[in-house]
Amino acid sequence: MQLKVTQARSVIGENQNQRATLRGLGLKRIGDTVVKEDRPEIRGMIRSVTHLVTVEEVD
Image (tube, rainbow, N blue to C red; front, side, top):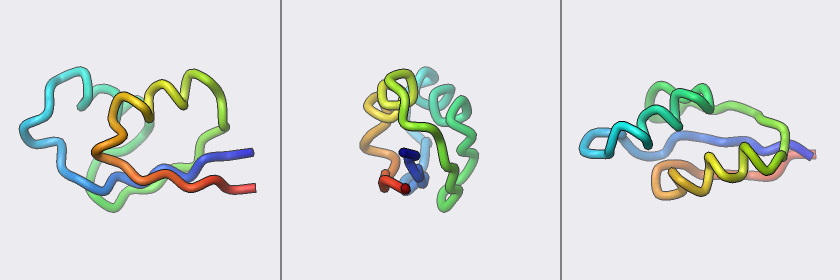
């Protein structure tokens, strides 16, 4: 199982940790999409920036 993560909102006004989390996921700007393995570490990163991204499960 994989997760398709898309940045939906801007990081302007967000704290440095959330900006770093998005960069760690590979997202740089609104509309960027990455596909990541469904692992606990990735789920945790997504949970910390859930208000900035949309997530879909991909088989």
